[in-house]
Image (cartoon, rainbow, N blue to C red; front, side, top):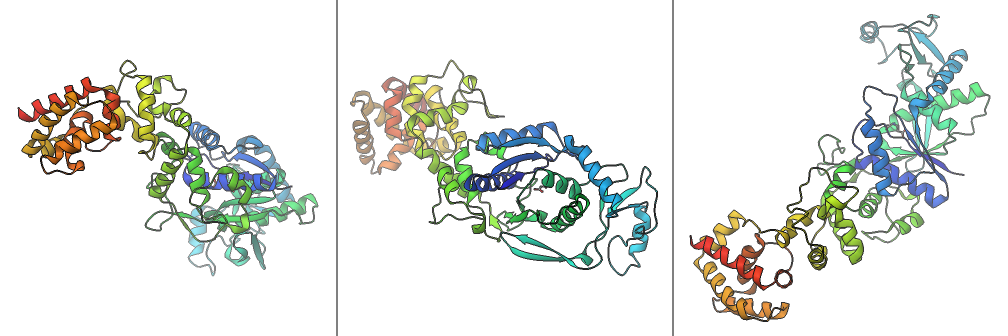
Length: 480
Ligand code: GLU
């Protein structure tokens, strides 16, 4: 049975690259009926933080990437790593090295081959604090990485120095710890980012050496699949620091997990048709590791935002209300986005009104985070946008005429979408204006801005009194 693992190091916020790796492992496990293991590689105490560990777990839960085993913490497995190191040392795969960095650097200048020169290989250095353990890389031959996505990749051993696997302070390093855990967890497929490919031969060497110590014929090697890099618009590797790529941030901004899953699945993989939008069920059904491409994939936030909008529109009215709740009624929600202040208070808010408004905004927003600014005018008196006010009502005398005429017409028109539409159209017509131009002063006065939800529907919901009062105060402000 297939067993895969996602093995993140908690050294920062959970970013889209990690989410994509996690997703592809999950999809592979679900498609093949295998087991998905979560192992958090938290042995680098200096670079790990509790909040980042928690971030991995909550982001995966949010994205619906459930695991069958774990979370395991690598820091709980140190005894196994140390035991493996001792066994490898006993079998001669490791040797102790007391060279200082300075001594190594001094020799590198005159060495034929770069890197550590194997100085301590046969010196019989005693174990002591400060003495590291290095792996004896076979002098000759090659390690072949049999990659599902990239085919066989050959790494000649002479490109590898005898690398350190246990530091002088006793800390077991990644190439050994990772291989020991993958072995003991019976991992059958290692699916991870292409950036880790150069370390893979080291892990394969470890795996062979561990097999030999355990008397296992080397038939249990995992298969590898190195996923293509994610790049930004300048085709550079996506950077945690420079690109805004944390999954937490997207959650705060009001992306839907299903949209992120759909979008990320297409970064390096394509479904049979060329759908832009794909459901989780279809993904599980169609995902094949063999179909993952080896060329870099462009992470395009604009595209992901567009895809999110499509998912927002596909929600049922009830689902939309539920998804929007943390941004609209944060006080009543278990989870709420950080650093966001809703422009109304609990007292200003009116649930009945929101239920009427919701269908209007569902067609217009790409993310939930856009909702509050768009609908604030339903609950609180809007401040008029300065630039729009100067342009539409101050600089243009016709804007004021339009407002004055609209006040007269709207005082008596029947209060329906169609009648309001006809009234504004006719009022504008008298000034030689098209509907769009005629709507602008009215929209600005009532909503505070020149863009927003459909105007006539909004006027109907707000009611005649509120609309007339706002038109009146905007006109007064424009005339003063
Ligand atoms: N913990 C390492 C990382 O996050 C290794 C991951 C792996 O082997 O999949 O880079």
